[in-house]
Length: 436
Image 1 (cartoon, rainbow, N blue to C red):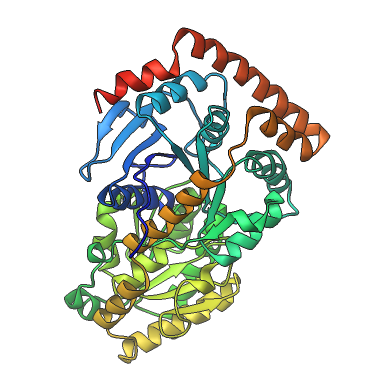
Image 2 (image 1 turned 90 degrees about the vertical axis):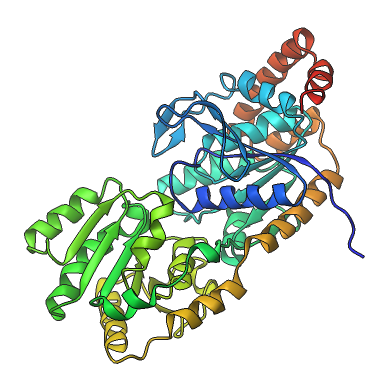
């Protein structure tokens, strides 16, 4: 007989959520749905998207707070900490939140929520979806300023691959004992093959992702014309948006590939399957990747994947049958793509329905939610850190940024005390329990 866990009241927090499309957004959406089905109360906190501000309910029943915070860069909010604290505190109290689960190293809102929630005495969990290096300036700043200090007082941490876990432990100087590995998943019934298009369409290579340097957009610019030059009929469909879209448009113009390279721009997530069903081969050019949900979605739709051998990608799918891996070198990826094209044209690729059935058994969201629930239990049952313990934690990481974090934490404690006096948490909780 399995032990009953919870139910808990959980806030999933990230700058990246619907209506934006991406791996983090998809992860939060389906994790929330499964946790609700398991009996937990779940809300999502993110920033406003255009006119989408305030409280909304998604079709899966998830309550979402779109808070009016300023977006600074690439979808992430401007870190204000003290400015966002009254908003976050009110939401945490209104919803009787017990666990704050932040997502993505790039999300300032997630890190702010973990810090504020921790000082309020709530339990905290963080999921790292990314890999970083250790040498370049941006990675050093992220590792030192964000991960090392932000995660020192977090109760439990989740990584999406074993490679990601090793990377996060080293970057954040963390205790490996409080870091769990739980892979991503996909809703495989939403990503099914289309046999008619798979066998009837001309050979088509699909790319879906953000058109940024980290996702290998420069590699894609180099690969596409070389493949088209060496094969007379193969075509590409490229979906996604980002600063590198201009380079891809220029490449298409320079090589006169308008009829063979289709640029779709940003795609809503409900259109991904429709695009994937038009091809037989999927290309992933990421330069760093903790897991890469897009290759699982492509494989579930029956496509053969060609990918760079980076980060946690080799852990995701069986090599050769499902995925061809190469170093992030243009000529190597071109050869791998042409080899896959040759196999497709000779009828040697795995049947799309067989591929879909295999992927369905590898990854599913209910299992991810069950494993995440166990992490929540560890967070709730672990030792609760007081405010003084949290200040000592920041100081233990080093004098420089440690003092900065201590000053910010003291300011937060001061304002939390004032707000607690004029708006007592217990009165909030009693009042809100009547309305929940």
